[in-house]
Image (cartoon, helix red, strand yellow):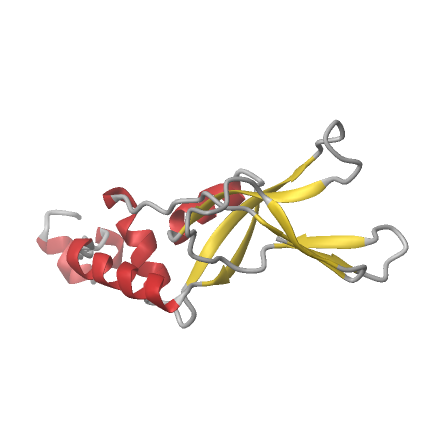
Length: 157
């Protein structure tokens, strides 16, 4: 997560996800990886991405978009007992457009970061093997759209 200094009379900074890195398992807790007046970067290890069959359409929408993204739900933490600084922390990650939309509908903060190439390859393979587009159903035209002759033939007078 990035804490970026901004020139604004009401707020001094803004938070945003910076990106995702593969978790090598060597870090157990969050840590500050850069701390300058204009930019503070925090690293939060331990997140896992799982794919679920009922989210296949959301993954398909992501893979088929011009720029596939990882969706990051994040929240402001107020750990005043631990430090004098409030900070933003990621809460959950998803690759599904649909799940991210549900989070936003619930008024959660959701931003996107670029999907790493290796992750895109795995997701693309999963979507190819698991996503089945819904069958297109024949739409039944309402009688009001038929010509007068067609309505009379069907018994209407």
